[in-house]
Image 1 (cartoon, rainbow, N blue to C red):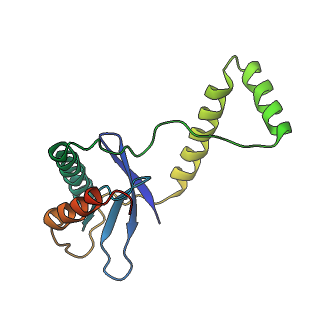
Image 2 (image 1 turned 90 degrees about the horizontal axis):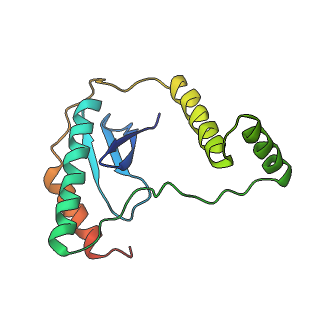
Length: 147
């Protein structure tokens, strides 16, 4: 099972390492970025926040502009007939096509999310503190942004 977490506009995927039973989070859409590992979802959220804060501090110290997970814009290619039907439906609902598509995507996300099991505070095995190793990973990623 995979879900996401968010902190300061940075989004991370959450997954379970089946071998160790730890929860793992890493930023989406970034080269390097931030990651965290923990025993429970609450701990993972806290570790992810620390990792993002350290990433932002490292970028500031180096004078590098931090990458962002998402801009909120993407190109969508669909069949012309689907495009026409979506525009008609948007107009009937007194919406822009952008608002219509955004709402449709959110509804689909909500449906999928409601079908997944919550990870909130599920106790697993003890996880090591990752703050120092996370910093090393971030420093390596910032030092070589083309990797």
